[in-house]
Image (tube, rainbow, N blue to C red; front, top):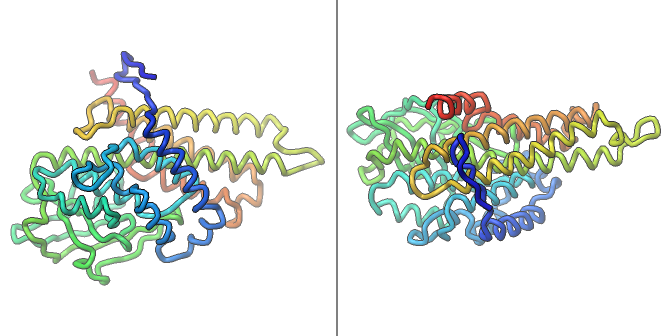
Length: 380
């Protein structure tokens, strides 16, 4: 179904056969490979994910799903990653897929020539990569402080570099002569002394702070040109959308966990799920989950290989706003409804509320995106 003509811009919403197929496969895979018990077993591990499961994800072609066939990808486009991220979020499945997909999208959208095709082919084949984006811990900051000198030497640090410990390539966002550039750095060129593990509230994820100072790169490892600034803008929007898709899946799983508890826990000889004070918030969560999916797949409908237009930007920001608040509300209610047990580490509700806290900040919180939406929708 497709609808258009809103005063707010496009309201197109479609769910393709490819997306349906991907969602079915991804849900089945994630459900089998990432049970709650398996998730908990990996929380204290060094990598935070099972390398064997990552290898299986690579064998299914997930890292290259959104890349063109010319570089070894499936050519399905970035919209095909939305159902994958939704399924991963529902099962809390960890791994460097999100980081790798965003790194490859940034490089794909910024390249001026096929010179970067060799690296894109490497990423499509499953080499983990990540974007060194943040110069501070503020996801809303846009100033680039990392500098690339005329001599090809980097100066500056990056914060919260996702999956840095397992990444084989870093796409470092820097500036040179006042213009944004992308610097491709192999993991082997980043010394251990320059890395510092960064603890995240979402224990299913891993990140590092990295000092790239004094790392010298070849001219061929620098991506320049007018497309870089546009690609960086798209990166933040695509990151917000994919995180929103993941959050929608996590919120649905959180609701299932909460409802299952309400159906089994008795108090004063009566199932607590029979009380309207607990039923109504669960309905609110369900509505929020359905709304999140609508916003997310509306945004996915508008995605193309070209630079994202105004309608796509509006859709991505709306999706992130809705998903952020839905998962936060679901996590809060899960803790509350589990009573005193909800505040213990052994309660699975903890995993969802921690995921909600990370989701709230990643690629901008609801307030940040609402501020941007105000100018997009009202300043016309």
